[in-house]
Length: 137
Image 1 (cartoon, rainbow, N blue to C red):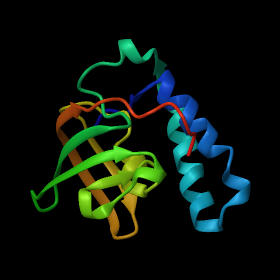
Image 2 (image 1 turned 180 degrees about the vertical axis):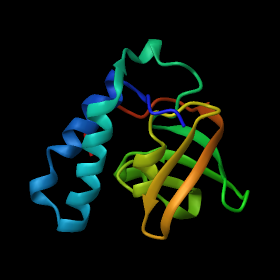
Image 3 (image 1 turned 60 degrees about the horizontal axis):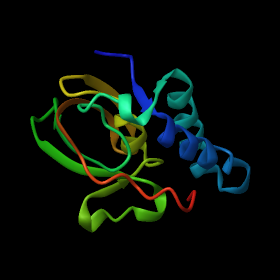
Image 4 (image 1 turned 90 degrees about the horizontal axis):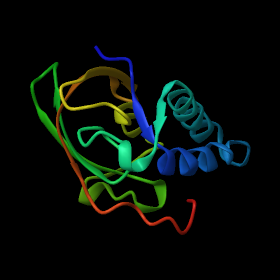
């Protein structure tokens, strides 16, 4: 399992702004933001233009393999205001959204979700148009 994750400077700034909201949200969401902050603190922050193309970042389309049952999961990682389960858009503050952030194609990671611990392999990462820089959340 790879423990090194990468986050672009642009995403890191917006994530930091989300984390700074922790005192103003409910306890469950505060816990999710604390996990996101842990990931931010352990990440290698790189300029957006230097982020490797196979790294999961905000606005990436991601294909994961659940190594417990070999099912394939597909998501688009987004900021909370864009989350939409029906469209496969998972928020960066959702447990699995936080868990996948910064990993690369081929990486295997484990993450605790409300349904239990998941062990996942990153199969494919496709970058979409970068998220707008306007609003923070």
